[in-house]
Image (cartoon, rainbow, N blue to C red):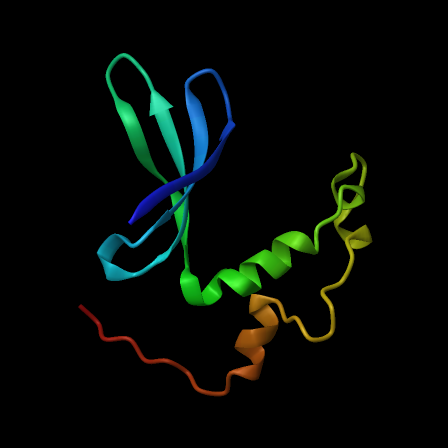
Length: 105
């Protein structure tokens, strides 16, 4: 399943494409750069995939941004805090008492 949702022009040669896909058997939303050039035309490695299970949380985070938040001159101190029920990744890692072990290769 691949379905383009939309695209945003980044510059004369690059668009940001949003698409639904199930690459690797994992459904989700992919946001990726698509370039059009003399030597190469196609998707680049630049982008991100939001797994289907994470999509509601991603939408909540995106929808929490207002146009006022993006006004010029706003400093980091002025940004609004996350709603109490929404934690940042740093806060989540503090709450996670288990430390994940990784094998050395």
